[in-house]
Each structure stands twice: as structure tokens, then as C-alpha cells.
Image 1: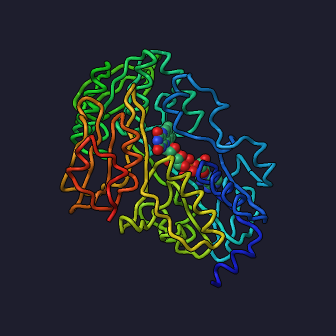
Image 2: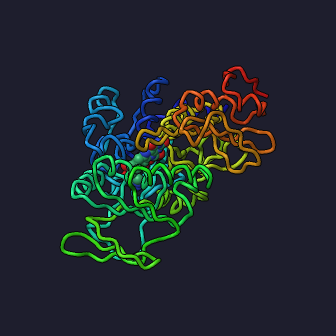
Image 3: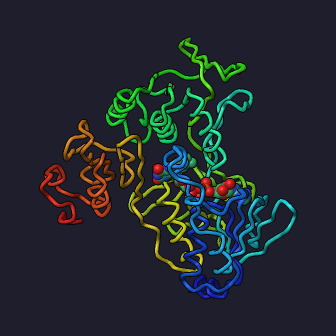
Length: 409
Ligand SMILES: Cc1cc2nc3c(=O)[nH]c(=O)nc-3n(C[C@H](O)[C@H](O)[C@H](O)COP(=O)(O)OP(=O)(O)OC[C@H]3O[C@@H](n4cnc5c(N)ncnc54)[C@H](O)[C@@H]3O)c2cc1C
């Protein structure tokens, strides 16, 4: 009760981070009637924008920059959101709380939100203009040029690497992918589904080399030679490295907040410092449905958690319970995934995964933890409501059963 009363009197909220999580939180605060000051600190020069097209439509030149922003600049003015772009927050004082910017300005706040996202994990070795990473729109612009030049080596077949490989192939480039694992996307979707993706890429002309990695990258006048751990030498215009992200936890850890696999937050997205919240890719959230801390790197989560956390900052006591959902587009294959299958002892399939028209349901001790669909978005969205329940496996497998009719419990 005390928290609710204090939150209602809050005068200034400071949001650190200029991504979709930050934009969604600012929007939610205004929609819930917060009429105090909102300051958004974003180190990138662009208004908060959506990153998913950077490996897809934008990379292929099918979508322009104007389609990327979450809101246009006028929205922030119209909603009296003080958007500070191109400036970094360098310190968090959890006691205030307060945030200090790189120019020394200190912003005292009634609540702070950390929506700082993540940055690409770097490959060992000296930095090079020809070794590229993809997180920001400027990165995508550079990769677009390389794709036009004709040959690309992709290091890491996670979602970013696999999507860039697909977009580059569609654009006509020669693509070699190096992946340490046996299959692409293995960490996210498991070995069996990863094998299907290996086939999808190879069938479309990607030179996919699994169980191989980079030993060295040598620059040449026209590009690079990538020497692999197995001893091959591959010539290319450049290398795109997609080996995961590191959550931007530095402000939180320097301030003494609990940091685990990201900034640790409770069910309401509040950190170990009262009045300091975190959302999106950086937040390691105590998820009530899964009964464990989960940090995901999904657009939909950043959007929904950002929207949710606006309410939590205002004192709403309800926990964040979204079961999670993400998608990936590679060639004509649309993957959608609901839930978070941290373990499973039963996989039930409806339709056919091999024919790229099916859903795999992951159950653990009878509880549905995840559903992965290939070109089955409708089924996956319906399955979201079943995550955490004990649906009848034979009904899951039966294409004639509408998933909405399956009882939750
Ligand atoms: C190329 C690409 C494709 C993707 N495709 C998909 C997809 O198909 N499906 C899907 O579900 N997800 C996808 N994602 C993931 C999705 O974009 C992220 O989950 C989402 O962007 C996370 O939003 P966020 O607001 O938490 O963090 P971010 O988008 O990372 O934004 C954080 C912002 O905060 C800024 N910042 C950090 N520290 C500071 C500081 N100290 N001071 C000021 N500013 C700071 C950062 O520079 C950044 O601008 C993709 C991501 C990328 C990069």
C-alpha cells in the first residue's frame, strides 16, 4: 500500500535505454495517466526503433529506415517525453535513485527503468572493418554493402546468423556459415529442429559447415580470408559474426544491484534496489509460470515487458506473466515459438515439421513448456494460452482439434 501511495506521487521517471522496451514503457506510463516527467536516455542517435527488420526486410532493401521507429519523433514531443538521444547514462545511484549522464548531469528520479538491452558478443582477435556485427541500423547498412559485393562468411548459426545468411542468399550472395555446434539454431530449438534448418539452408545454396569455427581472419586488399579450425581457407568480402549478445548490465553491477544472467528482477520486474526496474533483453526475470529466472532476447517480450513495467513503476502489484513468444523469418519459412522449454521429456508433433508445416509441443512431466511452429503461426499463438498447463498430448497431435478448446489445468 505504501509503495502504491508513493508511486502515485512520483514526479520524474528516468528510463535508460533507447530501444523498444524503453519506448513501450514511456507509452504505457502516459496511457496509464502518469503526468509527471519522463526522461528517456538513449545512446544511439536514432529515435527508438525496431531491430527485427535489420536482418530481414531492411537488410534486403525491401523496407526503408522510415519504417523502423516504434514512434516518430513527434510522438515524444506530443506526449511530453524528454527524449535525450546520443547520450550515455554512466552511473546509477540506487539510493536516490538517480542517473548520471556522460556529460555529468545528474537526474534524480522517483523510479528508474533499465532498458539497456544487449550488445553483440565479440569474437577474439583484433577489430577489423571487415569483421561485422549486427545490432544497430548502421551495422545493417554496412552488411547490405557487403552482400552486394557477393561473398559473405557468417560465424555462428543462431537466429541473427541464420537470418542474415538467408537474406544474403535471397540477395544473390555466396554465403558460407561456420557453426561450432552439430546443427544451426541448436541452442534455441534443439538438435532435431536444428537439423531441419540445416536442410533448409543447404537446399537454398548456403555452404553450411558445422562443427567448425574461426581460427583466424586475415585481411586482403579485396576482403578477408577466413581460416577455419579444420584448416580450410574461405575468401569473402567480409565476415558477419553472430555469436550471441551480452546484456548491458554494467550500470546495474557498478551500482551493486544483483546481476545474474542479466539484471536480476522479481516477478514485477523490480531489481534488488527498490524503485529501480529492468525490462527487455537485459532483464533476468523471476517468471511465475516457469518458477525460475528467465532472460529472453525477443522483440515481443521487450514490448510487452516494457508496457507492463510502466504499470509496475506506478505501483501495480500484478506480476508479469507473459509466456513469451518470438518469431524468425528465413526464406519462406516462418518460425514461431511460444513458451520457454528449459527441459522436456516428451515432444508431440502436429502436422509435419519436415514438410515445414507443423508444430512441435515440448512437455516436461506432462506440463506444456513450449510450442515451436513452422509456417503454423495461428497454432502457436493459440498454444500460448496453454503454456504451463497439462493438455492431452493426443489432442495436441490431432490436427482436427482446435487448440483453443483444450482445457487449461
Ligand atoms: C538484427 C536483429 C534481428 C532480430 N530479430 C528478431 C526477431 O525476428 N524476433 C524476435 O523476437 N526478436 C528479434 N530480435 C531481438 C529484439 O530486437 C530484441 O529482443 C529487442 O530489441 C530488445 O529490446 P530492448 O529494448 O530490451 O533492448 P535494445 O533493443 O537492445 O535497446 C537498448 C538500447 O539501450 C541503449 N543503451 C544501452 N546502455 C545505455 C546507456 N548506459 N545509456 C544510454 N543508452 C543505453 C542501447 O544502445 C540500445 O539502443 C532481433 C534483434 C536483432 C539485433
